[in-house]
Image (cartoon, rainbow, N blue to C red; front, top):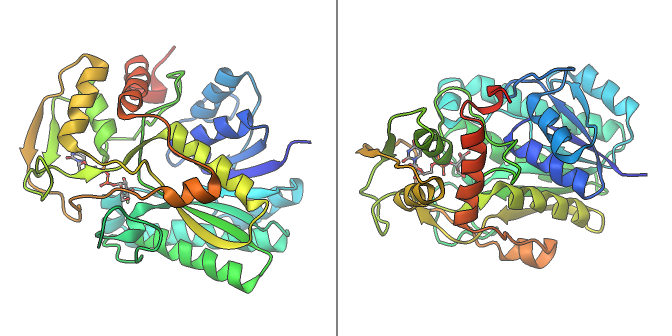
Length: 348
Ligand code: UFG
């Protein structure tokens, strides 16, 4: 019998790509989502998961559950015997978190507390948490390894990631048979090779590559480049972009690791290579064959100059390494964007 894994927030960009990898690896994912950031399809399923079903020809078990509803969560755990939990659910917009800090603390922290409580009361003790390189704050050295100090986050979203990491660490200390892995993502981009699922931000994209791909497809006129006076080779911000499928595979490696490890441990999921905003624009122009006009504007508050991972620990202990290069990230992103100019609401 396939191991049942609960996937919270599994209809979103990262969650849906992980569901694909879980199914391919022989797990039985049970997905919950509250549709905050997912489009409804038919038969009660999110559109993203309906498309995953089509890609793989497999059924996905889904329930609409909000982590703030602890009773509903508890009933779900009564119904299924989960061997582990992949926890993605949460709010994720940096700017919105500055305007609505309490909403972010309520949803991200309370949701996670409910999850940990219900796991504990049902004897489910293995957890993979969707964390972020944002917990490192402004890097003190590069590349960033997992021993880099954490907690210097400047916005409520980032702080929730940091606080949740701390809660999970404390829980693993308090109940010695718990085992958790914190995956610190760098900048996930791209899409599944089928071009049927991908990132579909609501409204104006906050992140670089969804914006760039919307310019390439003609949905937006030009890109605003937030500053070209950073201390980087071309003056624009440098980040460690990682293919979403590589990132998703990192979760399978983490789940495997949970079978034999104990305690709580953090791993970077990145490539170890940094690219500037202008390099990303050029790479997308090459992949799409379209021009991506841009304007240089003021720096965005809270942005750092450069950020890239030292991914050696994940290679050594999880046996995981990112495989796809930048060209492939942009080709796959373009396939998704050009086939679905308006995201999941595009009719096929
Ligand atoms: N950028 C632009 N124009 C845009 C959007 C972004 O020039 O329209 C630039 C940014 O200034 C930055 C780079 O592109 O130099 C990447 O920006 P993103 O918003 O795509 O990514 P960030 O690295 O700022 O943020 C990401 C995640 C956050 C996470 C953070 C730190 O989106 O969730 O990494 O790990 F907190």
